[in-house]
Amino acid sequence: MALTKVSYSMIDGALVNVADYGASSSASAAANTAAFIAALAAATSASTGEYPDGNPAGTVFIPRGRYQINPDQIIIPNWVNLKGAGRTATMLIAATAGTTLIQMGTAAVPTYRTSISDLTIYGAYLNITGLSIYASLWAMYNIEVGSCNYHGIYLYSSYTGKAYNTNVYYCATSAGYAGIYMTGVSSGSGVNDVNFFGGSMAYCFDSIRIQNCNGVVFDGMSIQSSKRNGLIVDASSFDCTGITFQNGYFEANCDTLPGSIFLGTFTKLTIANNYFAGSGAFQTKAIAGYGFNEVTIINNLFDTLPTQNPAFIGLVDEAAVSAVFVRNLIIGNSSSDDAIPLFTPALKVFADAALYPNNAVTTSRVDHAAQYQIQSNFISVYTVTMTPSTSGTITLDPNANTGGWSKTGRVVHVQGSITVASVSAPVGTNVLISLPAVIADLDEQGERIGGVVIQSGTTVLPFVGNGAITGFYMIINAATVAAAQTYSWSFSYITTSGTP
Image 1 (cartoon, rainbow, N blue to C red):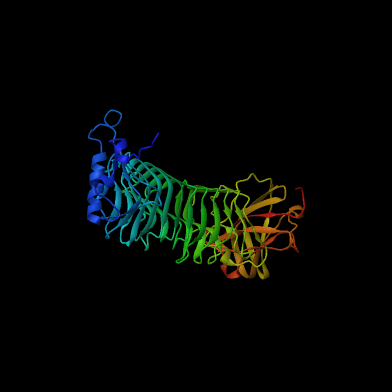
Image 2 (cartoon, rainbow, N blue to C red):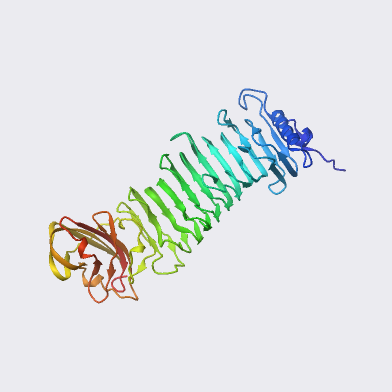
């Protein structure tokens, strides 16, 4: 039996081929644009009701080829799928600069149940956004957007969308633009319930920028070679909650300008099961926040650390409410100063993180961050003394001199605080935290300690462990000690003996 070639336009009246309306690789941008508009209109349902109550719309198929089109005219209507012959087969090319090349709806008239699949949108390095989405209940499959000087993909007040294998390269060439940019007019009216599954992004100014978004998930995406930041959650004047980035791969971000892989004010943010392979030449931190509020950072592998500022995970301010940092592996440190996860006193759980050696303490290890704090039921208390190393007298407030420690196997957590009652010409002041000898067997080879000291809640001071004595010295300049001055600390270390 002989087979007969059947064209898309012959299969179903709802399956429209743009070639039947004059679109081709050799046609002018004006002719292709007119053909796309006519094909989209032909595929649109004539019914005003929603399927199945009305008549469903159809698919506009774009055969293999390179199609030049004019910007700001191709709008995918309700229920219509714009489908190419494959991401490497069908390419839509911007003929001139403009606002956007392809749209799902408009800001004034959003669409619903639209989709786009199996094609590449190429901006030809013009001032243009590749794809703008003003839609709900939308879908996107096997899409590549490249070489758009503005955003690669722009989402505005978009709801319930799913994107599979989304790839954005060489877009967003300057500040204010991103490979994927999500926003809305106000809190709660931005992008909600949107998921990106798989794909990659590379060589964008900022890869992803989020404003006024809730319930956004990025799963299995690769973010590489961002000019500045990998992901910005912009909540300075916006509201963003419930953002998840999981199963991702990060490499060489912040390769031109100082930045971080994750930056922003984080509320209900989850960073899980990601691989951070390497830092860019200008990466300041892997994760930097203006606040960590109900944040979970879990099961991540940080393979190499920032090359510029040794603080690896840090705060710009101390407005955190709560955070969880568990089962993260930090390896490949270039020096002992590099593996410093930093949070605030509100940190709820901190476990299984890298700790740094107890030598060569420098203030560069911290970045305007407060203390570690592990949620624990302390099983023993201790007393603290504060004495000048050479001369002078320091008297502590007996009602504000508290401390406790707990031990699980060889892991010990210590925290406490003191308040100075009076000072008489101290010189070379240091603070000695006295610990029972059974858990304070420190030595340079076997011990790894971590933590910071906070002076009156603002100034971060270093501390050092000394294996020759039982305890820790926290080094404080005598000139900083004054009546009513309060010091707080919280750190963990591993003993070389005791019950495992």
